[in-house]
Picture 1: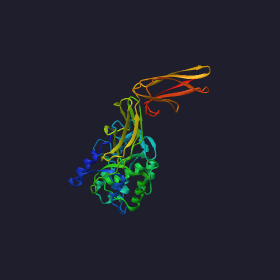
Picture 2: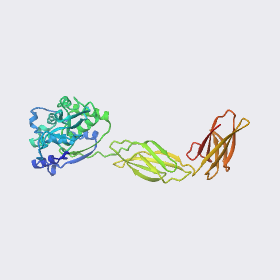
Picture 3: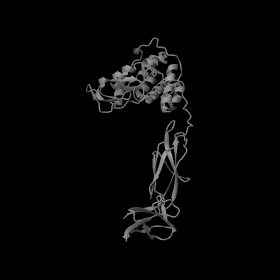
Picture 4: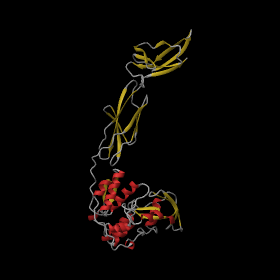
Length: 395
């Protein structure tokens, strides 16, 4: 007994045996946005005349392992080990099932209903009335797409009933539900009516552009939407470090999906990464570096670059000092090492020495001074740079 859904094998075998799947009806894969997928759905009036639930033979055991489509769905969606009503493991007794419709969790299989994302009656209204019995059976037991059948609570299943999004939406994850609904409509070549189209367009405005991939079994083959939209520029690009530079940034967004980031230093491409951080260990002391990060989507569209600059400190530049008081007069004796050229010395925001070659000095402060911070920098470098070294002294 497999503990995973059969990935549609039973469905495909059933379709092949019935003669429905042929070279003329080969499945195609749609990859694009939900918004574009809606434009591929036929808009037509709905008609429930002649509908009977029994016209959709459901919960069949297509692969003959004694677990029907309901049990296969419970197996696929359980979050915990299952128990069975008998040793033959044909019928689930307990497990753990989470309903994204309302956030409820259930541990008894008797508490769980298997919801058809697009209800059987809605499917009938949307074109299934013209299908033969085999195709309706295949639809009612669709294990080939995990969006088709969902384990939910009895109450929410009853509340939804045969409604489409004009009359019912889940309390949680509305955008996921909207995407799943469109996917199943497209997968089975089902139509939408004008009111449903209005509801879906409103959800598009609410949810924004969402990527979607679905195997389309019936209907006119769908051409994927050409993606010409660039990702947004990465934000909050920050550079830190001294002997190596660590870059972090906030992820970009895209109408389909961001797949990578290109990290450059100056005009040189350093790396292409799929995460929002990168470490450059090839830097040298006392050098200013300019980094840029560009987001890239699957179609190769690139964002505008995010930019940041950072200076590495001079190798070994450091400063030490001691204090002394002579006849109430306060002095700081300072020594710095590691300079590779001329330096500037600051006390707070006041520059004491400019472009000097000396590496020590004594500075007198006012009698009221209780502490002071001294900073030594390579000449011409801002005192807030990583290239500088500081010491704080107290009297």
